[in-house]
Image (cartoon, rainbow, N blue to C red; front, side, top):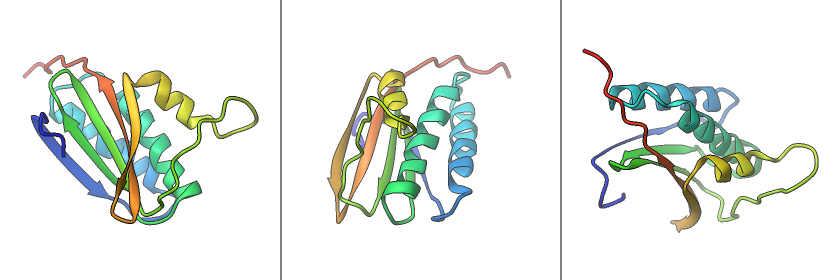
Length: 130
C-alpha cells in the first residue's frame, strides 16, 4: 500500500464476465463516499484493467483504491506475471491507451507470482453537499 494514502479499500472479484461492472460500481460508490464527484474516469480505468485481467491474465482480480490527497491511486492485481501491452493500432485492445491518457502516471509491479497494474488519477475532490 502507498505510504501516502489517506484512505484505502479493496475488493476481490470473481473471475467472470460480471466483474468489470462490479468493479465500476465499487469504484463509483467508494469515490462518492470519499467525496469525489468526478468518479467516471476512475470507473472507466478500473473497468479496463479488470477486463484485461479477464481477457489476458488469470486469477481473481483484486481492485485496490487509495485516496492520496492529490488524486486517486488505482491498483488491479492478478496472478499473471505478463505485463499489459499498449497497442497503438488495430482492432480492439486499446484499453491501455485509455488508461495512459486518463492517468497522470501508470506502471506495472511484480507482486508474488503475479503483478499489479497501477495508475494515478488526478483528483477532483469536491465534497458532496450534506
